[in-house]
Image (tube, rainbow, N blue to C red; front, side, top):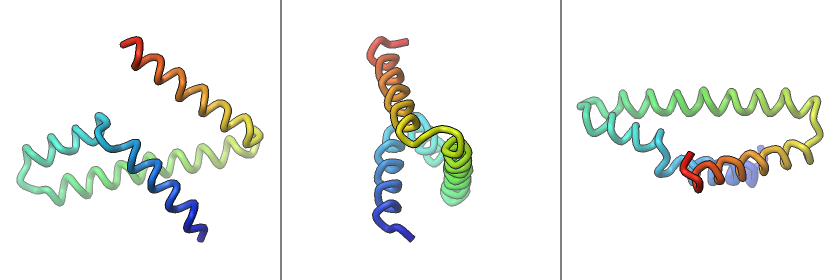
Length: 89
């Protein structure tokens, strides 16, 4: 197992998830319910499922698209999303 890659993936997802809408929704669910473990398990399973989809999609796309273009495409998408946030759309 590539522990450097594990740490990089963990750091990227951890930082990206802090304070986003999903994290705030999880806080609201935990605050409004007595079963904190149910909220934790449900939110964890959802993150695992979306991460699995991302890994599978990334593996499939990488068969047909060179890694350089995947990086460029991801960079463009992040810029576009950032512009949408800046412009308030």
